[in-house]
Amino acid sequence: MVGSVPLSVHFDVTYRCNERCVHCYLDHEDYGELETTEIKNILIQLAASGTLMLTFSGGEIFLREDFFELLEFAKDLHFDIALKSNALMITAARAARLRALGVRQVQVSVYSADPEIHDAITKVRGSFARSLKAIRFLKSQGLRVKIACPLMKQNLAGLRQLRALADELGISYVIDMTITPKLDGDTSVLALRNSAEDLLGVMQDPTLQGKAVLDDGSESGVGSAVSSGMEGDAYDGIPCSAGHNTCYISPYGDVYPCVQMPVAAGNLRTEKFDEIWRRSPQFERVRAIRDSDLPVCAKCSIRKYCERCPGLAQMEGGDLLGAYERACELAEMKARVAGVANPVSAWHAQNDGKILSPATLSSLVQIASL
Image (cartoon, rainbow, N blue to C red):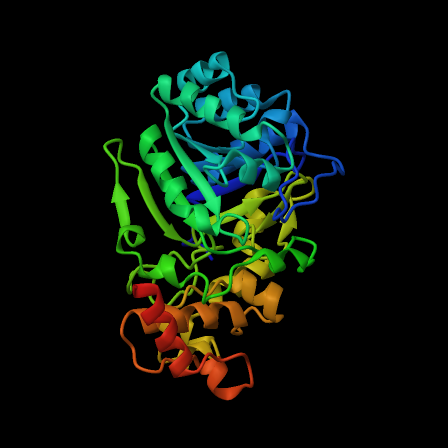
């Protein structure tokens, strides 16, 4: 597709990590990461293809001894650079260096304002204190910092305390209601998910809805890191931006439409990025999909309340075009909170999936309002 430009690229430079988070979807072994020269070559190709926004992530990015070398190289190519890190390895000197290299934002994983809960999730004692110390280093350098927290059974009760912590630190936060399967297809981590019923209080809390914009222009809010990201009719029925103006690159050079879409389109050790982006059958297939092509979702009466992710549809339901249970449950709950009478997704209407009765939904809404 000639008209598509990879404006934003998520590049995991390693899967290795110094934490072992209970919900993580990655395999932390190193099976032959891209070398420094290979990554530099890829960055040159991305710049030539029109990429503007570059997110370096992992694993833990600072475990790569060449990371600052890569960061300086990316700066010279004029990317708008954001980082995702647990910040355990960020010192005052490294924070100053990140500032000098023009990093726009550092997103730090913080799972609870309670050190015991956070450390239990990361499986690293003292990780909460170390991450907060690093956040203060980053803030002291004038860097924009954002807390990222996926909600799971272990930390749901402390959501407001986490938000208060972000306020105290003067930084933004993003809360993700989605726990995703592992990249190898293992779904055991889904047992950590909160039920749609348990998330009702989050959906009903007016202080958690919408986006709060801070003085530095950053946003806080609650949503899903894998929601469609599409606003209104701007994308003419495209169900997801993946493969249209965004893509994901693994530490081994594999290129995907998105980190949550297990559709490998090619490998940068044997192919050029532009060839993969413009001519791979996988990208062409993803780009051809329109909302009207979704056999179930296209006719759903509560579609506008749904944050359906094509990648999760593939991973959880086995069909890139299909519906899946989690999205339908959350859409029904959101619709009920919005005042829709007896909302039932098209998927539940035609199947024997788990459907909360209108009476149960009404009871839950009333209880959460007390």
